[in-house]
Image (cartoon, rainbow, N blue to C red):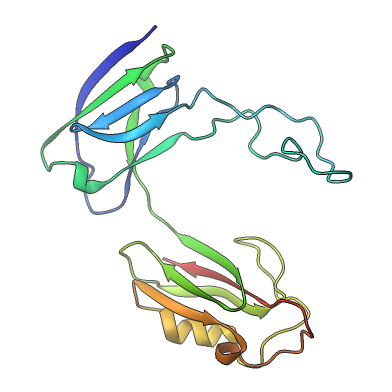
Length: 201
């Protein structure tokens, strides 16, 4: 069952991050130009779950996500590993797998989110691209998840959105002190305040 595969490829154009899609393979190791990009195991899939119920005591099998899908499918290939002309991909496949679907892609990050408690320093970055906009920012008790954040019932005295826009837009990275010193005192009482941010890259 153990098989070596070897092929050549050209580096994708431009400077966007590069990933290799290893869907269809079983388990093994991968190298680009002799440099390891790590172990892969896309045949290992999260088990299907019929219903999700958060009641009762916690266990690690409760309400899992992406059931029936690979634990990981895309593997990052640093551009520093690749040459401009011909590159070599070597796979050591342990389970058999089918390498016909292996392909390289570039990734374009549209947005990124962060959510952290007060008295921490938050660093925002678009990975070598400038931050083009702040889609959402709230300091207090924001609700929701990335892409669907909403303001909660309390806010800092200073406008979090304006503070983030002034500190981050146009920069590749910015650092924010998550505290009332930055965002002003709030009407949140004694709860631990949080900053939720969504940026556009």
